[in-house]
Length: 92
Image (cartoon, one colour):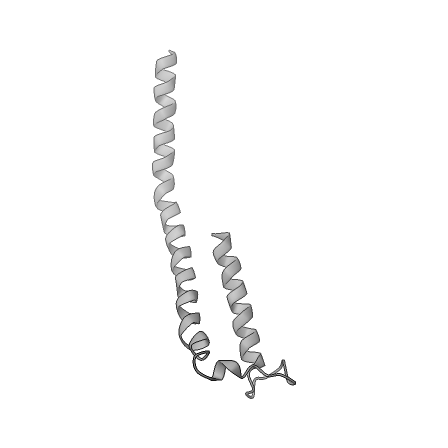
């Protein structure tokens, strides 16, 4: 799950740098060589189409991991306690 948070941070960093590098009123970086490639086909698909599914897929994975961890842990603990009880029964 840590990898998902790291990748979300990297994605956020890339999006912020891209927005601040495109020649618009928000431009803060790359005045000598602005990021105009993302304004033309086929590169316009990168910010327009690919970024949102990647972002939401990370959020869905994090949500499923958190939900799955909460659902699985009681079963693991119950199974472990049952194994411990059976070992103790064989010993005594």
